[in-house]
Length: 315
Image (cartoon, rainbow, N blue to C red; front, side, top):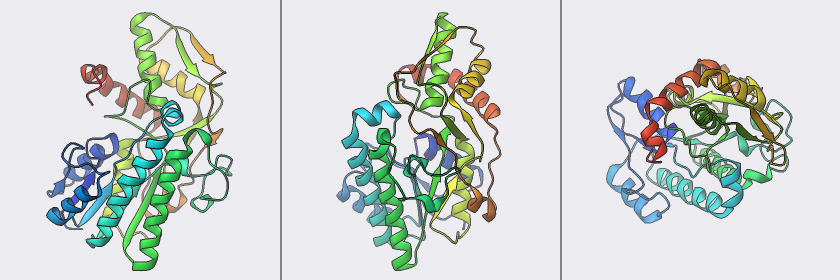
């Protein structure tokens, strides 16, 4: 891939999109395109069509999505389903119609069945029922994976789907009503430390989760940009998971919180375990580099440096 190749990163201001932008920029890619949601509403088919007609990107990276944790998914099922379908369908179809060289679709490990064997292999997709607390988002992402597979199968185009495990890092969502578990915990422990208060966490603490620093995810996207991958779907992760309770203890230590942790077992745990089988992407030559302890320290440093933006929810 030439360093002057025109690359459009949808969702370039989000956690993943901004990390991908940084990674490509650092490698010398000089023709990157990004549009804010005010400049381009990806839910609007006409706007997306006009954008592709005007800009003619050669590579498209779909890092745009409506995302959130268990609470947000449970309370707003329709927008999590419909808005994600609208965003990805418009991008995939216009990329196909405009013959882009490469399309990279980013999804989530939640596409796999709730009780699938561990670790999660790509071939487990659609073999059983989904986790009810995030099935709306998962169904949209599954549709995106299958759309990319269909284009690849029918038209032999280089459309690839990357399914990351739980991501975290700079530009994450730290809003306690809509964030995922790691950033929510980090903010809770920090504020409890400042206010000398206890920390209340959802569930039993027994489910196991795998976490990938967003800079490692960005490297996986760059890897997919620079290489022709032989299959349509790849898991992206570390291959290592921890219990939610272990995660809480790690964050507690990094933040330096000395108070009590209260577990509310009346709240849902979600999927018991989600560990990705990353064999396929590892065999192609990509591997994660940032361990969890180092990654959380990096994220906490970023969090401390961006307190004003986080508190006013302007990220």
